[in-house]
Length: 240
Image 1 (cartoon, rainbow, N blue to C red):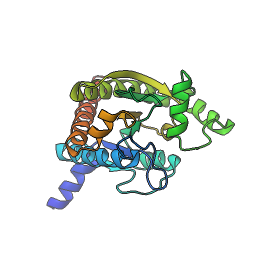
Image 2: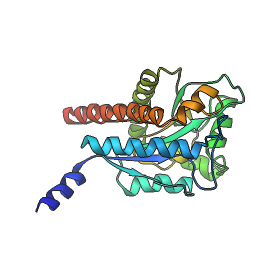
Image 3: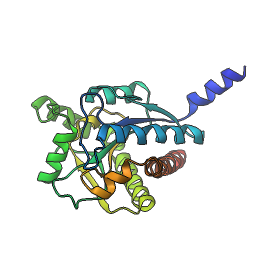
């Protein structure tokens, strides 16, 4: 009976799907300190999942819990299959300027605002044919649908909360909430964001992201923002 009650309680919790960027043959960016993006994102994601599960206010699903290849489209499919309330894809940034540093948070759009964001999207998209006619059509359908419009608005709110929490907790430069054509966000029915938690090409941020203590701080900041978002959105829904 007790087991049944626990399972029922877990089933009632909002599901947060956490997506550690890259994995397997797709290492992502390689840091100046030798840390790879796929390893940094997995470490942060596992800790984030632990914190959210421990809170008793959400149930988490990771798109990968080890070093394996997962198709970008499959990540959103996992989110949809789990009936996710939120989809958060975690990444680490890179730049040809060693001095570049800080936090960036993204929600989906059909086009990038400038050349740098186009290059970033192409790197994070791992060569996926996002800019093909079919992909453009998929994005347009997403952005035009009434249900997805609501999810997109919630994505902006979630991205803003994540951005503020990370910047404050890490005392990091807030580079802004932006929009870009990230393939991993295409197809997710839930509010979906992509977070760049620091620059691996910056010596200080790369060294920090390689430390367990800093990874925990990143996860704590993300968890606080996610739980706050869930609470606010639930209250708003109850008032409708």
